[in-house]
Image 1 (cartoon, rainbow, N blue to C red):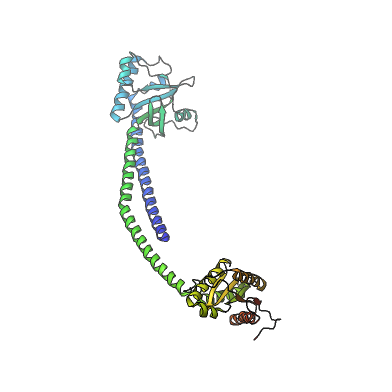
Image 2 (cartoon, rainbow, N blue to C red):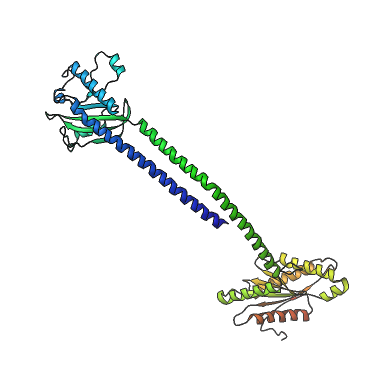
Length: 411
């Protein structure tokens, strides 16, 4: 389920990423297209300014009074009309006087300003001159072209002054007398911003529509995955239950003979490959036949269940506890040597001796302990543990005996 959800999430994420990249690319392409058109308009408009003004205008514009009011008003009207016709906000030229002050030599004037002032003089100081214009005057590498020659325009992507924010072009020119000046054109980019915002909104809308379109597919796919996951869980649970039942003793609910066989083989392989010893303990309930004969098999079953619970409760989490058959039990002490297994077994024997069992109060058990050693097979190890258990029972029961080669055990 998680794997499928991860693959679905990756597919959706990739799709949305592609769409987002496409929307961004589309926005940038539209922005470039619009500004390319605007730059063409700006360049065309600025290129007309030298043809509107007198040829020697910038050569004569040396001071505030060097241009007559009549000529100044005519320049204003001409540039205003041209600006309106070409869709520009302002058309003007900028010069630098002998004091290195920047002056606005002419520009379009609004009707409101013409009504307010009797005489509008535009050969005035221009403190808001663009940094690009200032750098152009100072830079020796700036190419000032003559009218009708190849122009080297300078574009200002976003130029702000006291009149607003525009996209502008500045063309470095020189008058017939050799005086450098800039012919400039400004265009209001508010409508461009709106167009780009509309384009962005269209892209976002398309993105949202695509997302809404794939949501039903995602929902259906997730439902199918969840249904398949439930079916898998049911089958897997059934398999686990069957597997668990196959290795679980029906009466005591601990591992059965098959479970113990499998664990013994695994422990032996681990010992052979990694030299991890394990202790093996065989346990037999003393005189269990008498319990069945005197108290009945029902009480005997209860004793077996309580006995198994006691073994599990007093064993470690990594110990393997199982019913070997009848009243005989086994414990596999992993990563434990003979002395350690003997210690745990003896502790269990005492706990059993001190415990009370339903219906009969007291019982005892005998323990046989053996340890895995090199050169001994699994069936031999079982035989050693069985011999130790036999010895414990022969010596009087209710005792723990460990198998040692030096000790004489019955063969």
